[in-house]
Length: 143
Image 1 (cartoon, rainbow, N blue to C red):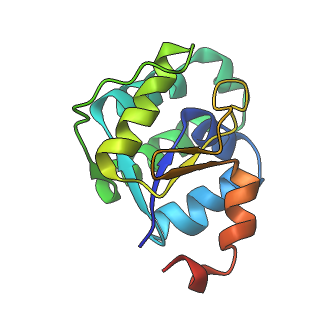
Image 2: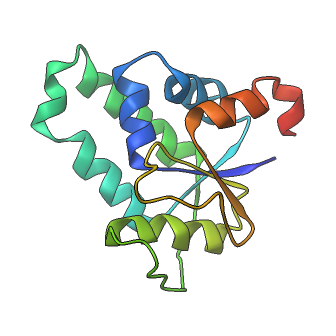
């Protein structure tokens, strides 16, 4: 099973609109077609972002966020990154790389093309939600 790290922007997008992040979250992560890798730092960031008042304007955002977060905590595998990485200018994004290294993730899925300018970091491919979906929309390929 492929291991993935979901950047926070993908999680937020999945809850706001029906698009590739939404498909990935529900068809791959929640259906356990991939192994979602998390860390305490990433969960803290998820919680911080999901609780921001600006998202309350979206219908049922809070309810969806609560459900998805409970699912993530139940089904994901938690890691404690040991290596500190400092190559991305937005310091918070380095924790995504640290988690990918510690978990030996196959993919980082992110919509943040400003900070994640590389296609790969060590053994982890960095892809957009659309790229991930186009590679793996046939679920048989992901195993």
